[in-house]
Picture 1 (tube, one colour):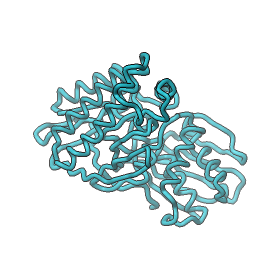
Picture 2 (tube, one colour):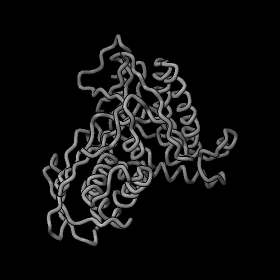
Picture 3 (cartoon, helix red, strand yellow):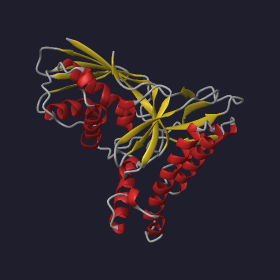
Length: 341
């Protein structure tokens, strides 16, 4: 028996570092992604082949922890088995078209494609899979097996992606609303900064700890509850982290309104404002990213910002119809979500 699943990467148009703060974000799934082909092998071991890396991993039950890409298949197998799914040992072939460490969520694409292929192999009908629960399980893999204390933004975008639409996600209620994203000649592109990142090993976890510390000082459950007056009472750098989240939530709402009005110049301005905040208040940029943002703007982008967790990865730029993006840039537009092939 064999099953194949594809899960896309994602671009977060705006709303960075808000998901684990019960805030708002506006991501969309993209055409590039990760494909997993799984086949029962009749043996006692699970075997994963990272074909792009030309590396292999074999593991038994109970599943032991590992680092790097090996944490993903191990974490998915263990997590699904803990949820009661009868997974027989199998072989998994992994290939991808979304760059690792790019801020385009190759991690979530890998978690979701692995999960969907293994569930199908276990006889679970795709139509019966609760995608909201699956997003939570994949987020558990990210947190507990990979070591990145990320929120569920990436997994939700990957699983609920809709062609030609962005997703307005409220992480306080987990309500998802589609927002028409008709580019009308404008182009969204990403460009590699040349500095790869890993949420598990960068300053990402530290930023989350700072947000949690800000909540403790204010006596609130999440930064979504913070008022502007409260922010001024925080010590540095907690005040700057909370200010970014507060302002970024407002930018998400403004971006939704701009998309509905097809006001792309306003979207571009919001992208640049978001980047300034991520650089100056959240301090998750670096010189490679800054050079790439400047290059995008010099090439004619009306707005540009770092995407993903920061500390490396790709830069997102919004180009008007009259401008030509850099030759090395990757064009992105909203596509459908994860699916069996």
